Image (cartoon, rainbow, N blue to C red; front, side, top):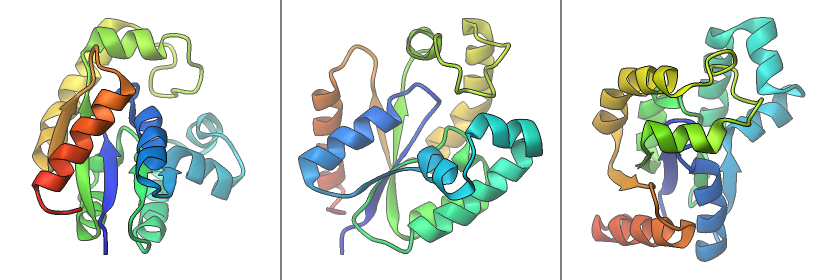
Length: 173
């Protein structure tokens, strides 16, 4: 059976957009983890953070990731911090290949600057903060990734093509 394609990376790297396009190109079902959590919990990510805190949200990520990983052949757009927990990475690797999407801090800023749905960036919407947070997560992203794709100045179709080429080259298709 086909392994799931697990898209990771910093917020604004293109995970949701790429997962939608990959779904169209491959005919695979696509799941956006954040949207999945919102649907299951019946409230926004912002409200979860505000009412219960980041740690509770991370617990939800783990619970729902375990549910999602029971299926095969999915394209999953993971939250930017999903790989922080070892348990989540273990779940992803059991039935998936982890694809890291990267972008420069300036690119991330341009993509997310008008968003109100990024609780970690609320009150910190600037390149310096984004760079600092990216640097904190960078080593972890690279450590767990099976495939790495830069997204700066590339079309969605080119990014998807690169992912599928690298995916097939590691014989996981």
